[in-house]
Every structure is written in structure tokens, then in C-alpha cells.
Image (cartoon, rainbow, N blue to C red):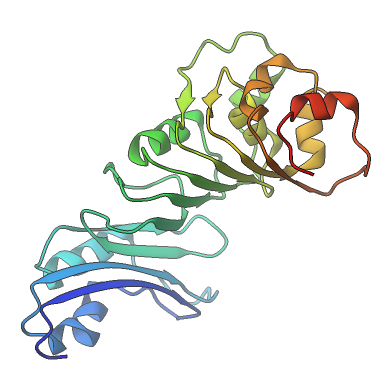
Length: 256
């Protein structure tokens, strides 16, 4: 190991007391690898809940990364607003296909390699957030959204015909969407073609009642286009076992 010159790490750590930062990475890994000159890494920490522990801020962690890791640019994402705080530290460019549990705040960089992403926060995701997601993750294929907080502006719009106030969020490569643990506003955000463009969506996991309401019992035209290519539909909290004719017209490609 002391002769190692290149190292790639993808690690997710749970139930620690504190976040893993640059100092920890140096003391536990880098100090033992004097010949290392290429270090691609992603380390995510989700500590156990302990209200007596003060977690480092993003700026604190960023300083430890810059001071201890000299091989290439580094960055971090700290999602402290969700019920379980989480910290991601990583090298740039980001070389991995999966990134989990980021919140409203993330750096303005392009994650060209990421194909699978989950987002969660205790604060609402505004439409601008999803525009940033589309820009920063241009080749995203799999997205999971967790947020139970309503977007007041979207709630107001849902019953309005004026949906031209904002530009459309374009997720051109997304084929799998998980919208189970969300407020109904996010269902409207993604299924309404005037708000989001999903030309390749084939897998949809969603709350049955939310889907029924947003599609107006599978008759609403503005939500039809984003559902038209769905081949696998996972309904949670399903209320009926036999669906209407309109349901099957809506999901023409649905596999039984």
C-alpha cells in the first residue's frame, strides 16, 4: 500500500458521531500513501442523531479539504436541513454515477457522470432548484425526490391556466422518477408538460391519490405527455385494484 500511486474511493458511512472531513481523510488514508498522486473520491457521512454534537459547517469542511488534499480540486455538500444531517466530500471533476441525499444547496458545477440522484430537504424545492438540477446533472437518468413541504407558488398555479410564467425544466434523459414521499406540488411539477419536459420517462413510482388528483382522474391533457411512455408504474397507497378505461388510455405502454 505505501507504493500506491492512484486511488479511487466511493464510500458511504452511517452512524458516526461526526462528519468525515479533510483532516480525517489525511490522518486515516493519505498519510500512509506517500507516493499517491491521483486520488478520486466520494465520501458521504450520515451521522447518528445526537443533538449535543455540533457538526462542522460547509466552510469548515471545505477548509479542511483544501488544507489536507493537494492532488486536485475538491468540494463538499452539507445537507443539515433534513432530519438526518449528511455531508458529502468529493474530488473534482466528480467521477461517479450516483449521488444521494443532497438538498437545496449544492455547488455550481456540472456533474457529467451522475446518472442516479436523490434530493431531500425540510425546506421546499422551488422550481428554480429543479432548473439547477437539470443544468448541473445533464445526463441524469434516475431521480428520487423527498420533500413533504408545499411550494406555495406551485400550489397556487396548479388550478390556474397560466403556466407560462416560468421556463420549462428539461430532463431529457430521465427515465426513472420516484415521487412517493413528496407533497402533491412536486407531482404536478414533474407531470405537467408546461413545467417539466420528460421525453424518456418509462418508470414512475408515485402515490396513487396524488396521481389521480394531478391528472384529474386521468383526463387532463397537460399531464398526459409526460406519462405516455411509462412502461412500469409503481402505485403506493393504492386504493383500487381495477382501473378505469381512462387510466389505461393514459398509460398506453403499461406492462401488466
